[in-house]
Image (cartoon, rainbow, N blue to C red; front, side):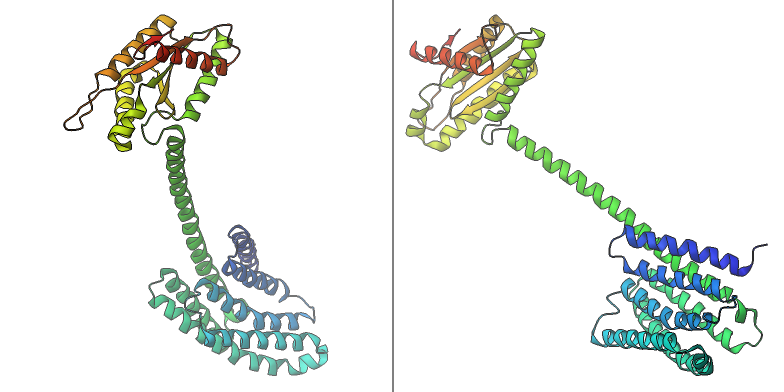
Length: 389
């Protein structure tokens, strides 16, 4: 048959272990630590009060001395805003000093002397504990007035504890005198429910914050990838990205024996545009041409990259040399067709292009780029505005 003491002992142990876990899981969660100490003390009290040990009288009194200190520290860490200031810190120090000195005195006294003075010790300790309970009432009431919902629950817990303590001392022959189940269980469940509610909410809040931060980080990483992979001015792929893509395609095609073509092109007399119309117009030329070429090639799975200045390359996976030359001619015509309006003197610009396809004589992608550059400069030397293969 389960006795009241056995039921309380089980509740105390489960609660103590649970709040120890809360303290370890939520680092710096001293409210859970002090409530764990309260329930550990209650466990010890439940275990020894029915024994024949003489030392139990000292242990019981020490527990009644230190548990109010644990209650004070518990509430102080639950509601730091209400337990702030020199006055509160002064009370805390006094309570700690009193508990330390009183406990040391009880423990060092010989058993005969202690038993002789035990009634006096209880009479001294009782009003101190009652004053401490009143003080905690005031602080909890302040927290409850601050619309802290769990403070109201804990305030009810203190009322249960206070009324039960009065019943223990005022009702002769009461069952609570022996077992105190109402006070013990009332404060246990109210406090445990409050802490579980608070830290469960905190855990889910943390999960929500982590999810939000993860999503923000993902968005920022995506934005950073776009920033790194794209040329800031033209929106074409950056030099780094386009060369990495060329290397990957070259290595893949070397294994799978697929075709890969590349177009290198350069705007003709671009320095004259900057010198005549200014660098803002030069930037506008680069932007407009990049947009035009992207519209032309994007749907085919080709990539436009800006190598530097007015030099670009286009990667054409799975494209033969003849098809690549056709695309190059389309690019040349598209660039030449753009008219830039400067007011009185509109102008257009041309480009020179070199087209190359990967073959077995190319050792790596660098060789392919060098070959494309050679063909580009051949187009320039041949009079510009043309495609060389």
